[in-house]
Image 1 (tube, rainbow, N blue to C red):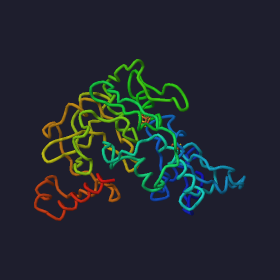
Image 2: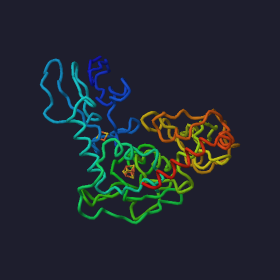
Image 3: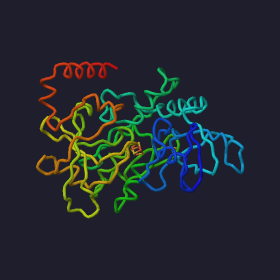
Amino acid sequence: MVKVTIDGISIEVEPGTSILNAARQIGGDIVPPAMCYYSKLEGSGGKCRTCLVKVSKGSEKDPRPMPKLVASCRTTVMDGMEVQNITSPEVTEARKGVVEMLLINHPLDCPICDQAGECHLQDLGYEHGAAKTRYEFDRRTFDRIDIGDKIQLHMNRCILCYRCVFTADQITEKRVHGVLNRGDHAEISTYIQKAVDNDFSGNVIDVCPVGALTDRTFRFKNRVWFTKPVEAHRDCEHEKCSGKVTLWYKGEDVLRVTARKDQYGEVEEFICNTCRFDKKKTSDWVIEGPRKVSHKSVISSNHYETLHPLPVVKTNPVLLEANKEQFERETRL
Ligand code: SF4
Ligand code: FES
């Protein structure tokens, strides 16, 4: 085991662990944000730079600090290493710069974007974003593309994190989309607009950290904070599908089905398209109970305790009013 200290908290981890994963083992506020790294996807990380940290002591053997900030998802810990994340003003400043870069082309359309409320870039923008952009040129714009009948790509919002490409590569039989071109011309595309059509294609929606890939069966049906997430499972006939999902209810209707996500917003187990798109009746599922939502999440603004939340909201005018106020506030931005 090797010992690493992050923001003054020490932990012993397996050799070969990245700084990001060591921080996740400690948990809490010291965990750097990650927009492209995804623990379930091999080779992911190293693209977005949101996870930058300062290594103030390289190791016990060589205590020199690292000359530049490093991507914590791609840097492995050394014995005696000391790392600064939230305790370093340099890191906070750099993260602001990274967010500014990510937002150069990304539209600020959170009030109408389907990902709002569960978008990592929205959270980062809220924490580190500047009120105004310094960018004076036109943003890159693209037409929306329907990738098959269930998924829509809105390339304007893509931050080129490659997660969807790795997902298609690693959990489906045949990848038909990727990042075409390089630099300012880089874009996610299917070859000659070929539909991403395989049993697990819907997972690209779940791994996308922004609203670039959205579920066409859910688009504009509701804001996520007005829905009620409930854990459920079914005995899925697809051998690779876990059948463990989150159902997003509005009243009695299941508006969408997603894979379950962990505290870092990563899918716990991937699910097949039948579970995701074709099973939208409560009778299709064995209901386990309400999903635990972090109190920091905007989804928890619609807090509920039981599986029949609607009557509670209806008979609770204060809650109803709070929701209405919040909706008006959000849509005014
Ligand atoms: S479409 Fe989403 S998941 Fe794919 S590269 Fe762009 S931001 Fe990442
Ligand atoms: S999460 Fe480390 S570079 Fe993107």
